[in-house]
Amino acid sequence: GDSVTQMEGPVTLSEEAFLTINCTYTATGYPSLFWYVQYPGEGLQLLLKATKADDKGSNKGFEATYRKETTSFHLEKGSVQVSDSAVYFCALTQYNNNDMRFGAGTRLTVKP
Amino acid sequence: GAGVSQSPSNKVTEKGKDVELRCDPISGHTALYWYRQSLGQGLEFLIYFQGNSAPDKSGLPSDRFSAERTGGSVSTLTIQRTQQEDSAVYLCASSLLTRNYGYTFGSGTRLTVV
Image 1: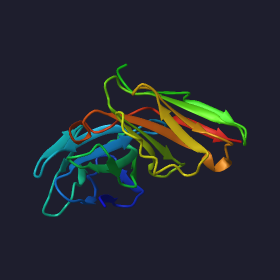
Image 2 (image 1 turned 60 degrees about the vertical axis):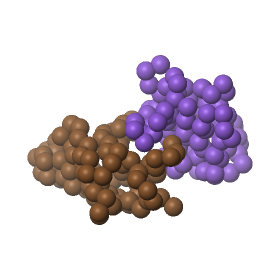
Image 3 (image 1 turned 120 degrees about the horizontal axis):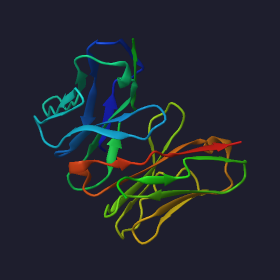
């Protein structure tokens, strides 16, 4: 079945460092891909999405490009801030249903 | 409402008691989901409602767990005879067209069984 694999955390970076969180997927057809962020004590918020191959999703300085050839959707940010400390979830959904598959989540801590 | 609303935000209950958790989805969203998130863990799927179809209950961990969705809107997750291992954050989400818009999550209910 469809699945999402994320790099294991936790990830600890210094402020202004470059961030990459790897995400790869296994799916038939043409899924839509998402990144969600969960700040401490809160629910999940949609961060960005891409609905077809080669699309780039972006928001709040974060970017991810839908790469069908490598079945990947890696999350990147050029300069992280302390306020980016959170858990990040990669997810996919198929064209023909509403069910979403989530990765296990990657905890990011940014130190000043 | 503008977002997914869950209540209560926090619930402390004694072991063996029953609890009810409520989710009020975004108006018009046909799909509704319940997930469980234990401390420091990922998301565990519990149950999925889609319109008037029979719900997908494949994620419910035991027969102590049940959920219903009345009138295609508000949902209640019931846990009977709570156990300490039921302690977790219970998240509700709703969606209209997931492939384009994803899920919208509520803030969750933190359940503590003492």
